[in-house]
Length: 70
Image (cartoon, rainbow, N blue to C red):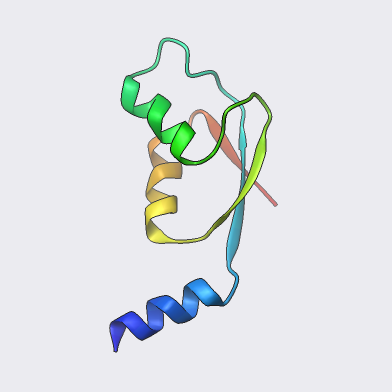
């Protein structure tokens, strides 16, 4: 039953737009990899991602390098 709720939420089209505002220079390797995992390769690049708990955790991990765009 719980999986049906998760798939319904993912199919509902809930998305979040994220912009890279900080540089990964002099950052830990896991923060660099997290930025790449979010699809952010260039400065001021905006990507639209599914709003899932794993994406929210990635955003929280690099919150000082990204901003959520409306």
